[in-house]
Image (cartoon, rainbow, N blue to C red; front, side):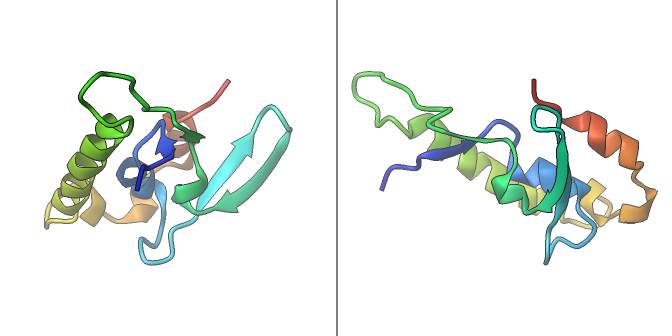
Length: 104
């Protein structure tokens, strides 16, 4: 099956800004719609076919599939003791999280 929803910012990076990885929620500010809300990282910075390629001999989702495999391994590496994800989430500035990703 071809993956169709692709993230501009990887989910493993976005999960670094949640308090509870088992119930991940991000605070999102939509500057175009002038509203804010909380949602799962799955719903943030995502666009249909963003990483789609049209290259002979390769499926259209080849890039997305390879990025997904890499990000899955990266996510597991970040969970290891002493990694960024194992730090206390309260020590992360909310401003840093807000500045980490913005969309225009």
